[in-house]
Length: 388
Image 1 (cartoon, rainbow, N blue to C red):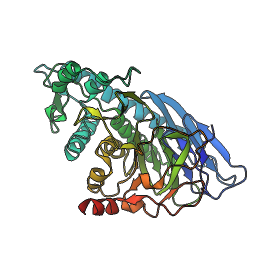
Image 2 (cartoon, one colour; image 1 turned 180 degrees about the horizontal axis):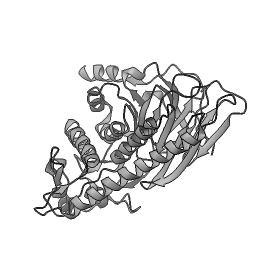
Image 3 (spheres, helix red, strand yellow; image 1 turned 30 degrees about the vertical axis):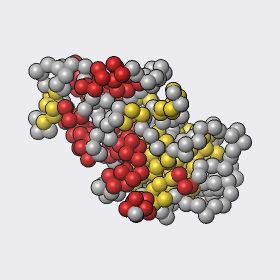
């Protein structure tokens, strides 16, 4: 499927919730190389990447490598695949063991990799005031989005799960790697954070094998290694959260990882209220005010760990939080409050709904059908308004 890109001179293509392309001049007939959910477009003069894809962690793992030695590239890609699967296996087994022992006196000694992921998740849970919560599984079950049976849970159900949700209850000793849950029915879930960590392990394996230029994409959680084939930076497209056939913005990135959190159009209406699938662990209700947030960070684990709390906190609190990590940037799309979609509406997303960290001011381009003077709000502008 070809996705529409508005007013962008460079080719831009989607990889799940985002798009990624080498920053190259346009050609009349760009040659795409695709696999799974990703597609890369390059000039005819640019060597095509070696591309492979496999099922992994409930989604697709896609790896693209630019290297003159195809044999080396294939061996490195296999090493990266093995690293991703090993991360999945270790973390899944550790969490299953810890969850089985919930409510008992037994602790689980987890692997070093699981300990690293859990330690990072709990640190961001603390920094975000619970905007991220690794014990929120029972909350998601109660709302039923994952079972395609979404509904407002009865108050009795909400009351019954309340004691089971709360990251502060997790007993974790980093030095001994011992973890336990005090109540039966509690469970740890690391979800996208584990996938971000697995992407990092894939990149690490590629680098160790001598690869200098690659992209690892795990279900839309991706990280780039080195510069693209032609220019020193990549161009990333952000998918319009209300129009999956198009992108609403292009961002130049030098490297690192990108993750997106959004409601993916999954919501239901009841009692005149609209409920989206992204839940705020602090209120135990669907988050409001934002429809998507994309996070650019030096590592996959950090971009993934920050995506959900930056969504539920919203731009104002999120701007303050993201400032604590050098090299991390974010793009929020606020909810316009308008529910009716016009079939012929092709004007794109309103730039005034977009909030960006200040470092993206000269690196992000809003894509519109017609030129406009409107631009995203920066974090410094948003926080200045809040002070007044």
